[in-house]
Image (cartoon, rainbow, N blue to C red; front, top):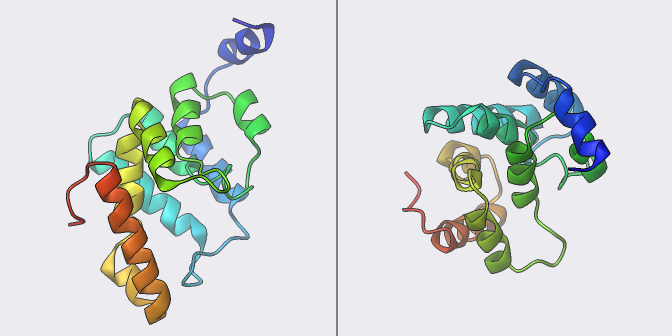
Length: 160
């Protein structure tokens, strides 16, 4: 264990309330594709993880799942944050890399303990018919195809 890792583990971990506030603040200026506040998506994913039996580390990861990918928080911030190693690993697993094939992304999620449940909740909210209905036809069709492919790569049943 490096000195930095030792320092991080000696601090108390952020509570879920603190993680939520941090994520809301980090994404405060963002909206989703339908123009809704991005925090609504984060809340839905966190609630979905909770409803699917996820633990606190997975719920924390749900709040932060898009933070590095969207440049709302840096990977350096994540590395230094008072979060469990598992939460950090899940967030990094869910962070798509530029030019990364969907198959590689899915493999990383499947290889990271706890990440699949968070991604399942993310996909469920993204593919919610009410949410998709707010989009134009082209975007709706493109995203539906994208989410269906990812569910298949992850071995998840069809969206409910």
